[in-house]
Amino acid sequence: MLCSSFLQQYIQQDYCVIDVGAGFCGFINNINCKKKYAVDLNKDTAAYANADVIVLKDLSVIFNESADIVFMSNFLEHLPSKNDLLHMLNEAHRILRKSGRIMLLQPNIRYAYKEYWDFFDHHIPLSDKSLAEAISLAGFSVNIIIPRFLPYSTKNKMPQWEYFLKLYLRFSFLWKFFGKQCFVMGDKVG
Image (cartoon, rainbow, N blue to C red; front, side):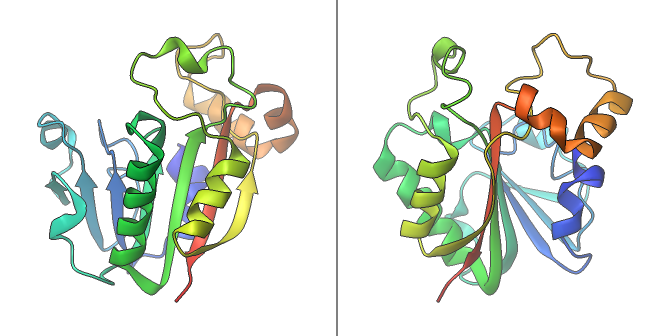
């Protein structure tokens, strides 16, 4: 639902899309594009990927300037350091074509500060502003920042039905009340 109601508008049918930290492949399985890659260290990711998705362990095997979109959702906060985060963003820059774009969906520490550290594997606190700064350092021009976009977790009191998500996405005034994740998008420079 998130793909068809929001994210797909930024992705053309002939694109090559890389989903970094793909996990259960909720994004990459539901996006319409020509080539799909799921990148995740978890060996179980392959079991969740649709037949049209190529599953990889890391970005190093992807050729320079071969992708149109790099997408990361709820991933960067799990990296052990800011240096690792910048390395990941630089790798995204490397594999993107000159007209490539990075799309990030991320818990926003400014709005999820009470819940953010409830996960043992969260290492890096990121806000919409620090995330925009980080992608700028990696060679992207920031073109969209939505500080309050989605609720923090699917483990909350909001109903999870597709109908409610569709309504939520349609009525953006709700985002300022429930949004604790940010959406940041940038275009490759240079």
